[in-house]
Length: 270
Image (cartoon, helix red, strand yellow):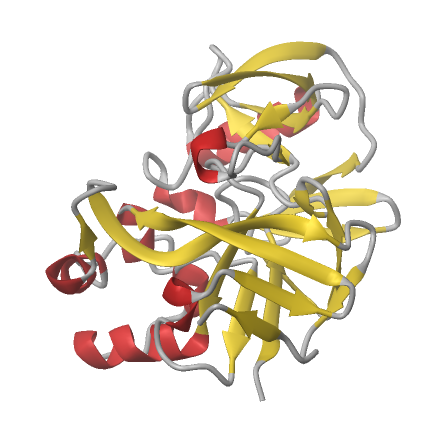
């Protein structure tokens, strides 16, 4: 039986994620997913592509607060509904508005990474839209993702590339929101939609991969070019000019509903 084997959110873009037993679906993706972002003094986003140690920033949500911490336990807490100074920020080519999380958060991040940085929260009063060329012209809202609300991958796909590389690869390298089980390798490539209870997701553009996949999520170190080198040998998409692994997705129905780990899922079009 096909099921939602694992569910993840990533409250802070490019920091460590949270595996969830249940997640609420919103029109912008899972609640609190990529709602926060680390930016430089010019407001430009920072990811593991430039700073692999972002993988060592742990996130947790509880009692109405977001906690960001490091292995020592040192960290900061920010209200989930934080609404501080409204500032201009940039993620890829998108220019957005966000709430600055203040001095304490900025000092913590700057000290940890050794450069001036700020933490910001997406301003929900605005809309950032996914590329309409890949959403059939629909207005699909997202937050600080690379471009689409959700990312879908299958465990079988992870297992298959692991076998090719010759080592077990932690799924956290690939940062999915939804990990499918009970399907064949690359079943997500052919799928058109996913259904689980009242939720219906449309799968869209294949996800092009970068050096983040080569970073060990436990050490924050890029030890080799794997698995990107192996993926490039058989998963390079000429049209997209990149290595593809997993599919982006967005909600067609069910916003406000909850998805549960282990719940059955129907794959349409595979």
